[in-house]
Length: 168
Ligand SMILES: NC(=O)c1ccc[n+]([C@@H]2O[C@H](COP(=O)([O-])OP(=O)(O)OC[C@H]3O[C@@H](n4cnc5c(N)ncnc54)[C@H](OP(=O)(O)O)[C@@H]3O)[C@@H](O)[C@H]2O)c1
Image 1 (cartoon, rainbow, N blue to C red):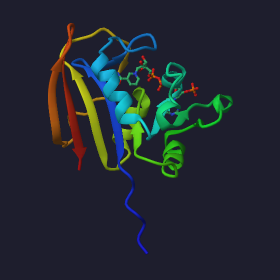
Image 2: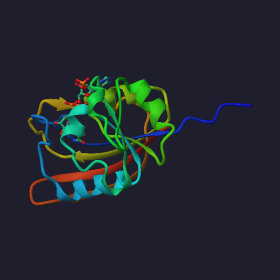
Image 3: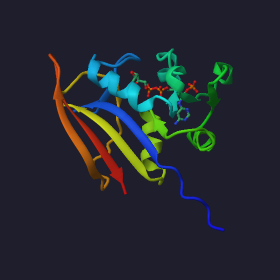
């Protein structure tokens, strides 16, 4: 019997034109529409995230999410929160949990996901501004993405585009 096809990884990220995603452990912007989009897209799903993202998202277990936190510190585990030390072990765990596998960052986790060879979906909010930061989305643009959808939007401070991309 053949192995089942691997579940796709759904990367979800908001990123400035210069690929900035974070500053000082936080988001460098407040875009209410994107926050709402992120919460709706991850509700009920398995979310794979780094230790800093976990520490700054106390409500991660709400709305039926299944968090898989990547950290060497296994003491972070609590009811409903899995902690595992590597990206590979996180995917092994995520494969056993319900829903889509949503890759929520940060930087190294996105880099490993882009390079892992699984089918990918990228839910990208591209903010049309250069924004100061210290954490970056690894470059994704050299990969042969297929665009599934795009929607333009804006708030009082920023213009941004919601893209859904697929590989293959
Ligand atoms: N704009 C967005 O969509 C978005 C998305 C995500 C994050 N962010 C921003 O990015 C920043 C946080 O991301 P970050 O990259 O600094 O940190 P992070 O990935 O959340 O956390 C880093 C820690 O997670 C563990 N870790 C992460 N990747 C690993 C890997 N591949 N293998 C083993 N361990 C790994 C390590 O934990 P231990 O040290 O405990 O072992 C590492 O010190 C914040 O500013 C956040 O707001 C933005």
